[in-house]
Length: 65
Image (cartoon, rainbow, N blue to C red; front, side, top):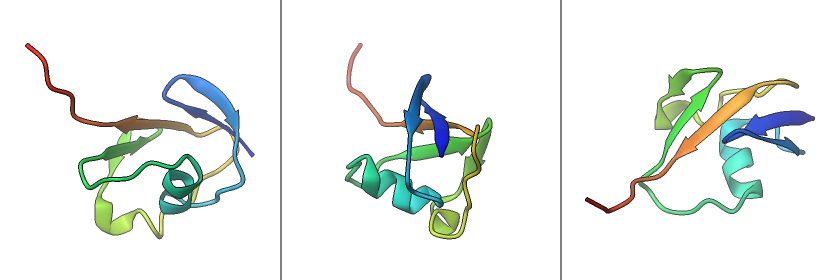
């Protein structure tokens, strides 16, 4: 399926948020995920289905100043 991930169009096999993170090799515990501009709580990542055309934002903290 075709998704937009962080502004970039990608062909993805995953059908749920948790599987998407695994497919894209995101690791760590400090992530925030939004699907179509709605934040998805971590407890729902394994259950939240993705659909063709969805826009996903994966946010990670960065240090800076």
